[in-house]
Amino acid sequence: MLEKTKFDQVFESLSRTIAGRTSRRGFIGKVGTALAGVALVPLLPVDRRGRVSRSAHAASGTREGWKPQDNDPSQCDYWRHCSIDGNICDCCGGSLTNCPPGTKLSPSSWVASCYNPGDKQSYLIAYRDCCGKNVCGRCGCLNTEGELPVYRPEFANDIIWCFGAEDDAMTYHCTISPIVGKA
Image 1 (cartoon, helix red, strand yellow):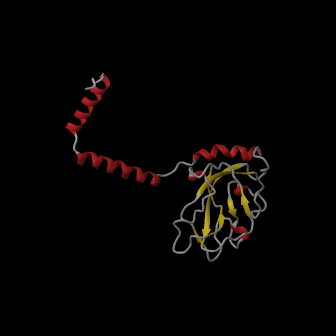
Image 2: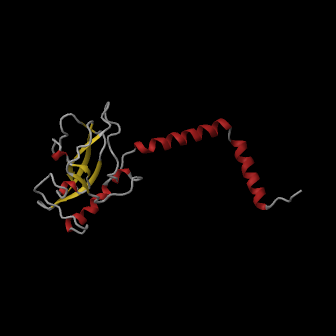
Image 3: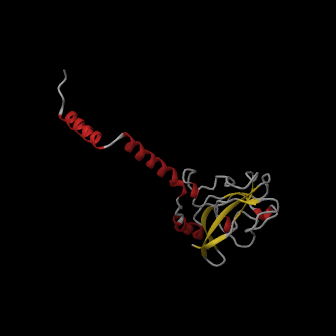
């Protein structure tokens, strides 16, 4: 027979103490509570203030090729489009703040901080997809200011945000970019 080491004796003693003080039902209940708690984590609010500090890059023009303008909202370099990935609704029958007729606004959005060269202020922009029609296909932009990988969805503009939209409105059409407030 093998001789027990000090580690084995301590581990056996600890195991027997825990087994004597807990029941299977109690253990299963705690595991169930932990699993339910983990499942609720995605429902917590997401702090997106980290992007505010990144707006200085847009202000200084340090991002390669990015010089924001405030004249033509149908262009990719319009200041509100600093983090847009998709088609601008201005070119698809909508506007900066309204979806085109026949589309529905997605219930979720991603947020970016964009610098307006006109008034030299930074603003929070809540990009929201308009859903329900086929892709517009006009004024396609891929701006990535402050974008992070998809496993950080609050900073990922590659996600089609039409999930959760009403009825058959799961098809992406274009993106609006309303101002939420000053950054």
